[in-house]
Image 1 (tube, one colour):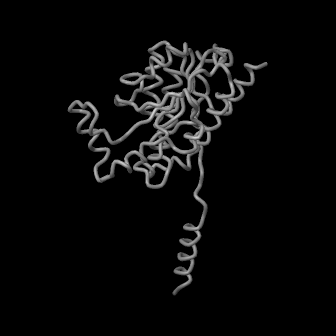
Image 2 (cartoon, one colour):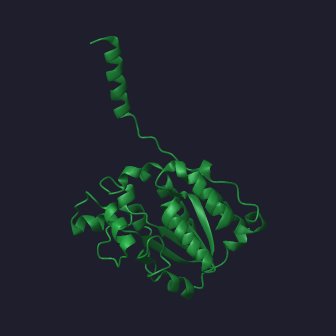
Image 3 (cartoon, one colour):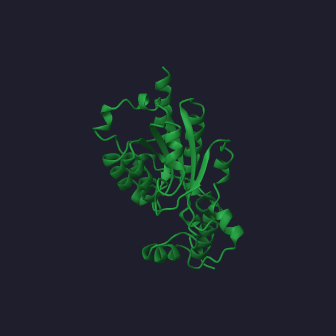
Length: 249
């Protein structure tokens, strides 16, 4: 074996044994759009508020999940969501906690022709038992332990929005919610879809950027920019904590 071969073996061994690198998308969160800067976000977060987690399931975060290859377990959204959910739970004005699931396995959902071909493409090659599907769909344990009696748990029935076909709209109205804080996956699909729907329904949505993630990290900056410019302020989990503290002073 030559010296080059030895170096290659040592490099490959070190690579296998190296800890997996954890990342965050905090640096991709843009400065607030000029129009949002005119708002007192601390004051808005003192209004009757809801926390909404979107599609934060075993499928995305746990080995064996159908979408685990996106490696959201290394990208920081789960830890940031835990931080945000705990901080919101400690504030009396957060009157609504909502855990919105999303299943890839939609064979029994009402479907158009568009839905049929798209939904079937998601699960090609995945021959799971009902028990395995239930596990894949389930809220990740780190968030499951934060769920309390009275929280709302629903699964999206539409393509990318829980404001259609679920109890969420009625639940928010009954709680007289004004502001909604969003976390979850995927930023450029279900999170953005729900934020747009919330805005059109008259709510004040706020996206916690580092508590979300897109399918591909390289698309997150553009997604943040689009949402922040047109639909809702995008802030970090740290800024969220700061705004809550400002509201208490």
